[in-house]
Image 1 (tube, rainbow, N blue to C red):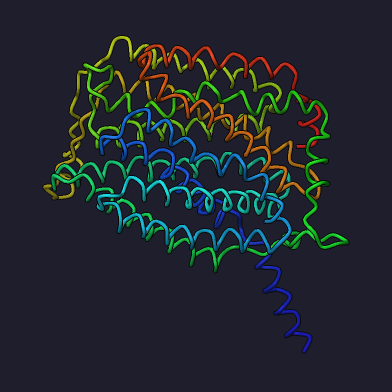
Image 2: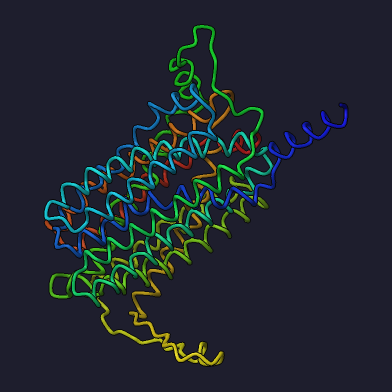
Length: 453
């Protein structure tokens, strides 16, 4: 009898304390894919289907669920475990990807896609709340800091798959078939299959931390008042809010128009790349640079602290925006073919491995994305430091929701601005609007947050 109890106790302990390497990477891969499909892959898709830049800019309203998720973050805190929320949101998003794959070639797809992307955005935002909350419950403070770089790495790996590989695949299939919609349908079908697999894997592998439970109160109601009071009563909250809202404003202006700029013809200010080229250059090599920057940023913060690095990391993130000003002014359009066919030939294969890219644009993209990866890691570590106490899941949701507002507003107007003044002035404005966000760093309570991290 005692032996049976010991075995049961041992099994419970294993379920509570599985190695984070088995689930943190896949959880944050699952967090990244729907966000990139909704806010990045959709840009390339709409542009290839002849949507205007103004329309593409207006799709920034899809950031809205991430902006207002702070209002239903307490629901996820109050009802059910973060583990369950995370898993079942993955299943629901898989269904949505199937729906898009089936409807992408319909005449009314433009309207239908916006509806489905909106649903995916709400599901994805809920998944983010649950996954980030689960992260705070399943790891101690030391591991939270260490895995910040790892989670960012696999989030960005999701960007390579969703914004790079799937975009290139869609472009290649579209070019071969002569119908670009066929490529997008295949891309979303693959995304659906990935999420079905993640759903079953996480059902089996995610541990059950003791602290991951529904937040109970004496009246059994959602404690909205306590949650918001605790968050907005933090020391120097005005500086914190200003930093969260303004730090990525310049990036918000740039990011929605980066792919249209790469895809537009040179005579209207773009670089004239194909969908496949953008999938490779921006969505693959660019994101690899982003990934490397994120890993390096997390490692440096762990070893040297956020306070010492927040300023240089801010410059790393914002100064490279000037490279888009350079590209829009000089419009480098010379393409180079890279032939790596000798690699499969070494193994007796006759496969042809060739890629075409713009070397100047590719270099600029790599530098800009690497800097963004470094700077964004510092930003996310600071947001983790502002998430404290019993309601830390909701507090992180508030912070990331406000962060999404800081991206949604500039993104929403970016297309209109571009159509009015052109890419050169849009990208110049994106550089200038990074300044207010950096000024807020002077007023942040960094020493306090470092002590609590």
